[in-house]
Image 1 (cartoon, rainbow, N blue to C red):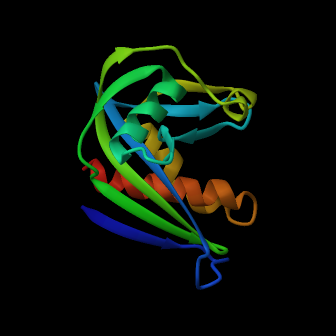
Image 2: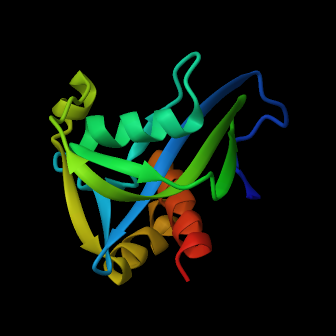
Length: 159
C-alpha cells in the first residue's frame, strides 16, 4: 500500500490530534459513485470517520451505506493519504469497492442539511472537477484541500 503526504500551508509542523477516515472508490460502467452536497455544490468520494473498535473495512462499508444506500464489498486498503493542517493529521484510507446490494440511506443531520445525495459521475468529468483544486486557494481552503486529496486518490487508483 502506498502512502502520500499532503502538507497544508497552515501546518504547525507537529500534530496533536488525529482523525482517520475510510473512503471507497466504486466504479460501474465508467462512472464513479460520489456523494454530492446540493446546497454547497460540493463533491466527495463516499466515506467517513473510523469509530472506536471498528476495522477500516467495516468503517468503509458502513459509511458508504449510510451516505449512499449502497451495500458494498471492498478491497484491501489500496492507498493512504495523510494530510497535515494546523495541529491535525488527517488519515484517509482508500479502498476500491463494488455494489452488491441496496439499503436505506442513514445520513447525519449535517449531511441532510447540505442536501447530500449519491450520484454516479463519469470518471473524466469528476477528475476534471477535482483537478481544479487550486482555483479555491484563498476562497475555500477546506474544499481546496479535499479536492486535492480526492484528485490525488483518483490519479493513483484509476489509471
